[in-house]
Amino acid sequence: MTLDSPVRLGIQVQPQHARYPAIRDAVLRLEDLGVDIVFNWDHFFPLSRGHEGMHFEAWTMLGAWAEQTERVEFGTLVSCNSYRNADLQADMARTLDHISAKGGGPGRFIFGTGSGWFQRDYDEYGYEFGTPGTRLNALADAMPRIEARWAKLDPPPTRKIPVMIGGKGEQKTLRIVAKHADIWHSFVSPADLPHKLDVLARWGEKVGRDVSEITVSNELTRRRVDLEYADALYDAGVRLFTLGIGGPDYDLSLVPEWLAWRDAKNG
Image (cartoon, rainbow, N blue to C red):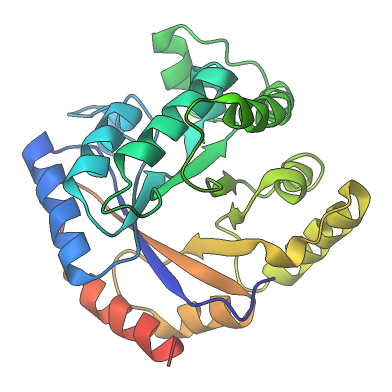
């Protein structure tokens, strides 16, 4: 993997149990603190407290983030491929890329995607849930369409939009990662990462891709700064670390400590 890449810190501002001004303020504070990326997630209901409470939609929110921020990259960790036509997703991503381009520089949008898993989203919004296999097949079918649409759009994206794919399945997900991803995101433990990376490398050989250029992304602990665990992930090859924070108040107290750890790793 890209072991010589700098360590980056992403914060997932979970769009649940909060009014939008609190979300907007959290994003502003995170950019001021110096994080590298801000993410939300692509669900229609909260994932905690019994799945009830305030919640906001992901992609419309990203348009606001593209305007309000100046430096940080941003995206959804991760978008659900099932909810939107593949070509539409490509156009939405390209539009966010252009909205976020400031001062003549490139856009800052990261296209995170996955096959989906939260059945209530599907049932209440009228999408066919299917099976893990059918949803992964749909993701595999969507990625070439998304890439082809990016090549056709006028104007084209301002840069090669980074693709982040989430999941850890060895038969289908990691094959899609090997073929299409710039970033692979998972919750895999440090002990299990070497095996998963070996599987990814074998898929890279089969699809004709050097997967060493893929950035490995993983999750940090949410209640305390566990440097031992983070160091173990780093030693296993992780270079993008993400921390989730939830409403209503978006406690950022751990962020400066993680930023200090990031800076120390980067020398």
